[in-house]
Image 1 (cartoon, helix red, strand yellow):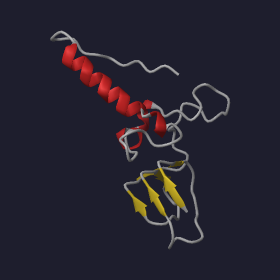
Image 2 (cartoon, rainbow, N blue to C red):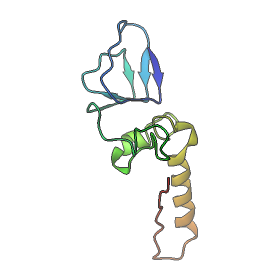
Image 3 (cartoon, one colour):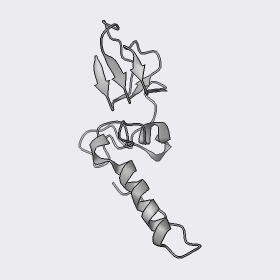
Image 4 (cartoon, helix red, strand yellow):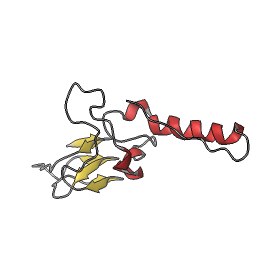
Length: 115
């Protein structure tokens, strides 16, 4: 098994643990995986997603409670999971840096996430 920027939401068992690598991913406790690199262990079926029901607008989007290890844990500093190529965490950090640079003193920017 080779996995990168994935969220293995439930227990996973791999027959050949000698070959492959799980990198920049979240995996469930109790899983039997090949070597892990820069990966995060989470409880099985942890509440990480806004919805797991296919067809919903918020399907597979991470909740704010997922934590920085998952929301900024991909190789490029983005979130793990299906939306890692969107680079939302990187865009949000860049936006906040620009706001802090150009906002008048004393004002704090607030990002409101919309699905």
